[in-house]
Length: 452
Image (cartoon, rainbow, N blue to C red):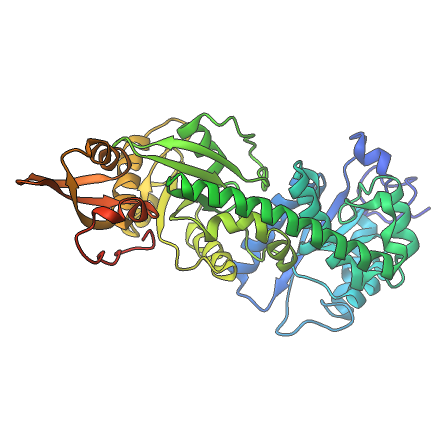
């Protein structure tokens, strides 16, 4: 038994071992984690990212006990952090009696294996941590399929030397950070079986994508514009959706509490109806495996007429979060979809931060108190109308039903009665022009926006 005076009180006599899945599942203990950040970024950026990693760790069910920074221009190929720093952290892990070491960057399979041999505890990276959180929060069939696919793509190159261990963890439920997911099939012991499982998941997800595509086509036939809520995780998208539509979506003060897309109808002040879709929150360094796996879900964003980009106005890093969201949108092919910036949590925001966001065109709201929501809805209606196509039609007097439909489905700007018909100048939503094409006297003007 060690008598090191630097070790914390209560350490003596505790045997070094990995926690069991049952202990974690029942909440008997939480894994004690050392968080390691750095890379080739500035000190402020590294500290900010490490603070976010602590939130992710807490969300995953572990306790961040200690933080460590090691900034390097290039990662060490064997240990990522270098031999000296790795040995220093090994002593820290032993002294603090930690259960897991979590890195803020993605580790190669070799780096992960080398560090686990040195530390003699579990080592996971940011990718595995986020995948683990997604595995906990996915409840729909589509969400679980997509998370499983992302996990298997991540684990496949990491099988060497870990097959037996991962199989055992999977068989008992996969409750340690980085191992949650499709454990019941014990795919990790056989690369070919994993590849077959990946192929099946890809087929199943393609089937889900076809269903979603059919649903989107049906919505387009209904001619209701689609508006998608996007934003950094925990920015308040689900709270805003509940405030606007009474959707009853789960709201938690945790990262990634929403994974499954929810679509609800929303009536705007002018009487128009839009479809409002909630989406998974984004984060800095969102794993590429997740972006690819959730592509069918995130296609709601690509297909939207307008994006409502919800920003946490109370965060001092709102600018970085905005750029992180836009980076993912570009990766999805949605970088050119029109965007309305919304500064949420104005009740908790600093005045200077609100002023800065307003300067970027953001509409301030509080999804919790409802402050600013009416002004936001007016702005939303105006933005959608501006995206519509302005057309001129000639409607015979005996077709009063057409005139009523124009008032109901579009915005009538001018209405003039002549000898034979009513001449109407109106803004129509995407798809609306085809329904009224027979009443167009000439070529349809081009839409100023994406909604044509």
